[in-house]
Amino acid sequence: MGQRGPECGRDWQPWDMTAGRQAEGSGTDPASARLPSRVAKLLSALFYGTCSFLLVLVNKALLTTYR
Image 1 (cartoon, rainbow, N blue to C red):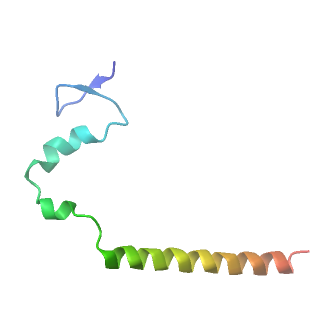
Image 2: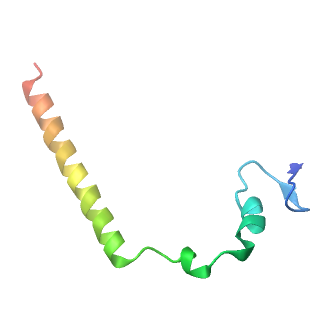
């Protein structure tokens, strides 16, 4: 069995991240728990794609000059 958490009466495990949120999140606004908008998803996808492409270019340049 795990240790007892101070916020709840059930057994607490170190990897259990929901025990602290029950006490903290009781009065939070449900709008703040919304999923990211389409614009945020699109921007993150573009950022990921740009970083991946630049990494390929740097890798190609390094491997081409390395002998």
